[in-house]
Image (tube, helix red, strand yellow):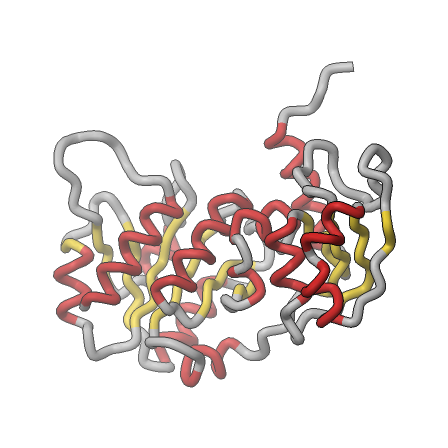
Length: 259
């Protein structure tokens, strides 16, 4: 029987995770940061002896009793190919509270990232890392057609999932309208945008800004584009195509951080 491609495995994993009440995080970094997060409800920790030694301090501080596993027969129900490094932690998904609270009084500058159907967990994980680095208050995505919390996303986020709010909303368009009422300027990233991101950032430096990014290829959906206050572009030297969405998010966040 042919082995499933990685992207197929991850898509199946995301589909299950979207409806699951718990998530299995894996990898030393992701598990260590989750153990250290008091907001995480931790249910089951499976580790090899080697991983337990490396995580000894975090395990002791968390109060979680680990289950020791044979590295050749790892007991956690992870998908094949998951690079778990001998550590897996079953947790409840994080509850960050109402969007309005975070948008108005969350940590960091009044900057948000909205993702329009970005489904790749690796892209979303990288975006969460950039959001944490540049101090965005939250990353927001629709509940459907987006990457849910999964072990793959958490591993790529390299701990940022524990600290950076990742909110999945019922309807992205309605959320954009809500943010506009809260005073946010909605800047949609588009290769055909009428102004450069740096110029827009300077224009709206004193306003809360929500950056709206679409999936690679399709870009922003029609309604999403229409709800943006302005479409902006990242300037490029030469005709080399477009940036990966996670790279575009990092560049855009840097631009608005400089203002």
